[in-house]
Amino acid sequence: MLDNLRVRCRLCGETNVNRRNFDEHLQGSCTERRIDCSAKDVGCPWSGPRNEHNEHVKMCLFEKLRPMADSLHKVIENQRLDIKKLQKQTTEIGQLNTQVDQQKTKLEQQTTELGQLNTQFDQQKTKLEQQTTELGQQKIQLAQQKAQLEQQKAQLQGHEIKIGDIQSQNQNQNNEIASIRKQITTLEEKINKVRSAMHWLSK
Image (tube, rainbow, N blue to C red; front, side):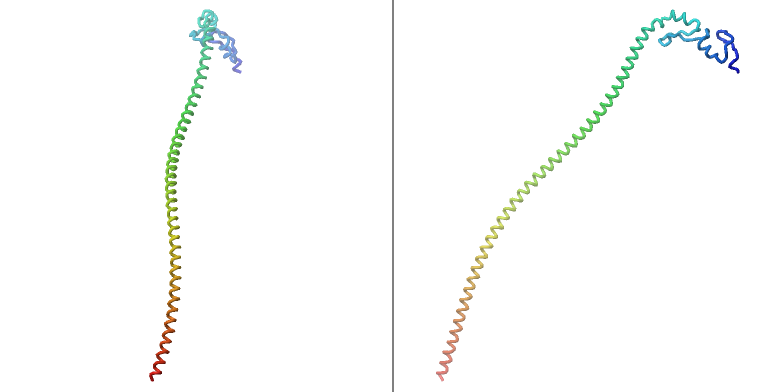
């Protein structure tokens, strides 16, 4: 109900303003309400009653410079967009540089590790060559020992043959000794018979 009351504007003095529409009056039709110049966005500092605004706009240098200001604004906006784009590209380049540095660091680490592996490989190769040389020497020594064993085996076989000959000779000698002993025994028996006969004859 209060919204239907009629009120008087203290700025312009207009009466019979519907209270419900009072804000619309101030914003749209109040001639004494202070407003800014429409060229404020390009730098005009003027502020005054609405009924003086149109006259001011006719004389406003800033409003006359608006086409140029709009062009400059577009240039500035384009430059701002270009700067923003460059900043984005700079950020991406920075990220790429960071990735490159990381990859470079990783590559350097891998290069260092590869160098260490090469060093270890060379050491293992040198050790293997030493072991191969030692194995060759051991093989030569083994061959020499084998030759010595073959010689010793041949000598042993020769000794065995000689021992066999000696044993054969000993056997022959033993046979001869046994034959001689048998002959001696036979002679002793004959001698004993002769002695017995001589003893009997002497009686």
